[in-house]
Image (tube, rainbow, N blue to C red):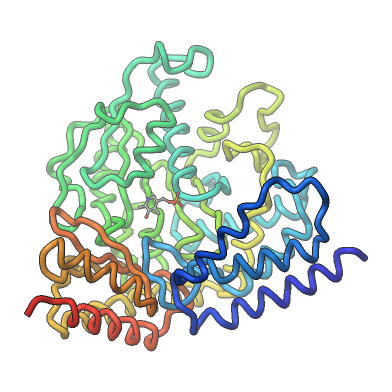
Length: 453
Ligand SMILES: *Cc1c(COP(=O)(O)O)cnc(C)c1O
């Protein structure tokens, strides 16, 4: 078998990579980065032995990754790959399935169906909702907007699918002032102008102020957020949904990471009322810790998503159990439900709860460590996000840069309501108390050495 040898050496490279992960620098050093130049060869005319291809990839590639799936990466809002989900990803790659149709992959379709059901249960979303397996929250937000747009136009008597956006009447789109770039990108892709968005004022944690919401009607799309990318705070979704439901407006929830609070008994109250919305976008490569790229678009009325995405009767689902492509903008795609199924199956609901709660508790520990050292925490640490100020913008940025170069851990910068801050996100299943303490010590050491007296 010609696969056998190459997969065995790949296994060797991958396991040595993962073994070194806990102790290595998070960001590659300058010497490693220099190696990247070796890849810039001219287009090879002759074939290269596949073994050699993988060996080169390992030698140059493995030292030039960012150890974002290790325990001391706190940048953006990432997450690593759980062992079962990583292994499932390998097996799924060996299967090389096209997940578009049930006839192109019975196993992919079934895994998505089962994993989709589990996700709805974990996140406390309505059972009958459609679940589309997409690349992440941006695409999931896009799906929510498409379903909303098509439904609202149908209600208005405008045939969007026949006539397109150019002659379409206006849909009012309401967002919070803290709307995520991904949500705006999704709106842009769907033909909405960013200057036309009605932006509602937010409070000190970035939550929409419910009293400041404009009047809603059946031509309104409201995009709320479960999990502010800086503070972790959730919009008052219940209040907004109750008003929207009466008015007949569509509510879409950008729930990239914040809806996972639903699995934690002590935090589930934060997500109360989320189930009253019409559509949700949830990332799986973030807090569920599956490999990239993975997210789900969930739509309460399955027909709304199917109808928004179908172009001809030939593709219209003929049953209540349509092909997976009915719920995603893509047709051919990989069987990304495989890893989702494996992650949830391996953890059980108990394990998912423990993972989410652990991240939240470690975020609190991080904040406590840094606060005790005299640094200011700018947000209420309700989930996995911590914002730290080290003084003025210049000083804070200098400290963040030096922390990144020092290599013990990695965290990025942000500007929170006018103040420059380090943003720490604890989203990986790998992160331990020891990782948090080692990282806090490194940050404090760097900050003390750079801080003006
Ligand atoms: C990460 C994130 C997104 C974007 O998700 P992608 O998976 O990168 O497309 C959108 N909204 C929020 C609130 C996020 O945290």
